[in-house]
Image (tube, rainbow, N blue to C red; front, side):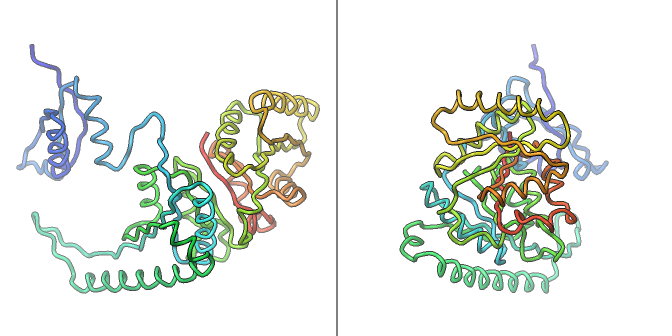
Length: 366
């Protein structure tokens, strides 16, 4: 009896041939269907068919080829990724990233993506004609990038003891591409312990409070992201004592707190769970907060944390005031609380908030 076939994917013919060779190298038989050159099937796509028994082996190969990784649990690699664009924001982030990597006994990787030149292409069958002037432009861009990178490293090593820098042996990645796409693709394949980046870049407009690249990485990366404002203290890590986590008494908060406590454990910091009552039943909120405190005390008897309740109809302003009054070093949020993030970065609100100028944000999934 013939084995049943299943469709793995529909791809352009050139990619289908690459996938077929990858599958064959793993001993997986595959078949390309609907290859009809007279009907331009090369452009419209073909189907890749495999035996059903091979599906569990074939899908990860397909995902890797397309730049995705399927995994039940992300295994972090022992490094801290610091995306840079040579701005003062990324310089501050690089200093903090270096200190964190050193504290964790991890490697630091500086990652820069230069904008890709717009190559004018004229497709003709399998031949592509390039404008030679654009190649020259690419070479000039590469040279300018290398010079900027060298100047950036001179500034950075001037802020860090040379012997520490030499002992750390940082690594560098410089490539052409779109920064946010490259960062996300790289962290998917090589998940770091932490991404440390400036809260915005050198190309940000005066009204921007968070850069578009930083925002994209925050919302889409599967690893924790620490964003550093330009005015964060130079010795920030030495004074990293307190983290506040904004809670709304959701079930996911206990998962988030578990992950947060593991993240900050090497730094011996205190975690404060903060709930802002915006005019609802204050007694109920106090009871729920006390229940959360008791549950956390039972689960983490040797970890420093506390729970606080404040009353305010203005959520961002209440968080900002609490940060100032209690000398908070980091505001921690999960991507699950996207509504808080969106409100914090609303230009009309955020210009009034101190946290955007000197308080780092730690964003993670839960």
